[in-house]
Image 1 (tube, rainbow, N blue to C red):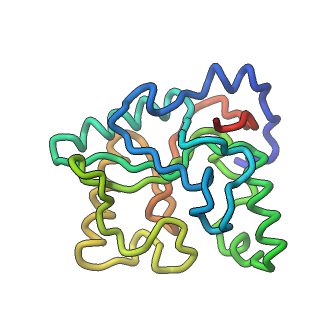
Image 2: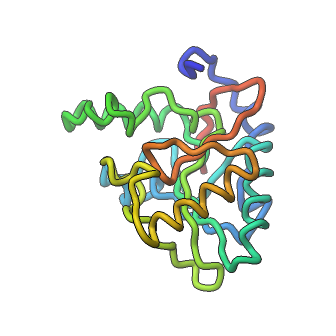
Length: 198
């Protein structure tokens, strides 16, 4: 689906269809990188106002089931990004142009038409349930290189990527093979949103 062809839904619709993840499960760890300077641009991204993460209700419910599946293993989920306002995607694209990094668009690391805008994509990792510490995944979040491709890991990192993938796919999520942290969830009647994530 070319998500850019979808009309941006009114904020009233976004408020009805999107849900804050902590409202469903307070055990999820939210580490909303784009609301802080701790992201690839070095500055907060427009559209992010707080350490919160949202998803479409159907995807959020599936994510809670993933977390419940992981709990007996002593694990939880650490969320880097969920729903992303359209204005944030446009700001990321503008950053690639300002910094002459359009290669990140052509190589598939930054999307000009993002499923995050639909509330149907999530960036996350596994974390220790007791300490909140992330598990070894081989690369940090938002590593723009082949090392971040899901299959390009060995040893403990490969095992942990496989654990994350298995837990997510069991509840209907699909991994993007160039980013071990990125998963999408299918729903009918997709809509784009630009409601600020605050």
